Picture: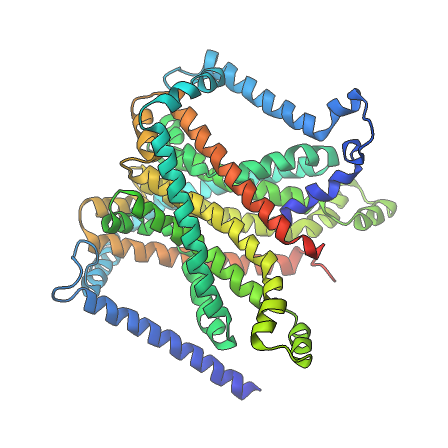
Length: 274
Length: 261
């Protein structure tokens, strides 16, 4: 996806990137500073709305939400719930990668298997998976297992598709020249195919991470006995806005960090292309 | 060449048929005597009978109308606000630098976290689904609009300007066709995400709609009905994907400028 490209392409012209001493007047007008103003303005708007306009039963000002974070984390069970959800995310992500990689390598290995099974996989990927959530809850119960499985069903398809697609992107000339120079099958795989798969594969991992986040959190919100879904349900049933917004923001921040890590890894492994 | 590719196609078709038969056989065997509990997986005949019942009585029409209405509303809002905002931002490099990273990082937040808040503010009715669908579909659309309109080759723009194009001509003869493929793929992603998030939110908390029908059947311990509705939703999703693909192809052929031309 070319969405991220323009931002990075536009940066070198800013004075900050050149590394000279930059006058403060220019620093205050830099895009990074302006971004902070936008965030600050949004927070101030939220504060005004929550304090003076909206019914306090339905909203809470950010000052209270952030001030309450310590108390929220000190509540019995909240840290455990966050850790449990993190564990579900990690387990689902690892399983999605392993299963996706195995299926992807199997499907992408020959032309026939790709033509026979890739369209089927694409069709399965297009199915709204939330429809099977009730089945998973019935089968695996309302514990962590059903969330992990649901996260895996969301995360494995991007891995499969990225693996198959990146196996096919290899230019035939590379394979031919490797063969002409007498490379064995393993050498061709290890030194030609594998390095070529890396960037596409990590793009798949990034999509898998967002899929796993959606799957696990959706499962949590649908039915949960111990994870964060349990607390969001309780807080919203009790109109406890301060705590509800607090826990939602914590999980959102965790999600952003996870995504940022995978994105960094992707950039790191695709740098040889540039 | 043509003979071998025909053979290839036949082989592929054959594998599909064999796979389907295997699945059906496994399903029948698993639900037979001493098999999986009927509350987890009902027999295929029961599911298809229920499906026929739902289709013949038209019981699926009412929930489908609700879901359809929510999807259309959510997508129109997301598309109009996303495209307008994206276009405005894309007109200035500075604005792109300020807003693009902000929107891109918000896109990584799983919006489903905010669904309880949507229900709180907008109730269990269609409005909370529309707002939720909007909040999910908005980001890919606005990001695609920014990236599409901002990365129009400056040669095109300069050429048009030096030939004396008016603002309107510049917009509809240069910018729109050049940005079209990227914007369209963003809209397509937005449409798919709208459908998924509306269904998801209906499953999480609602009073009507297809997602609610599935959830309700599962709560009633009526697995045959649940599977029947799942089949209906899958068919609708497949049709949606197919028609979106066709629309994208037609749109690109008629209005779009593709690279390398």
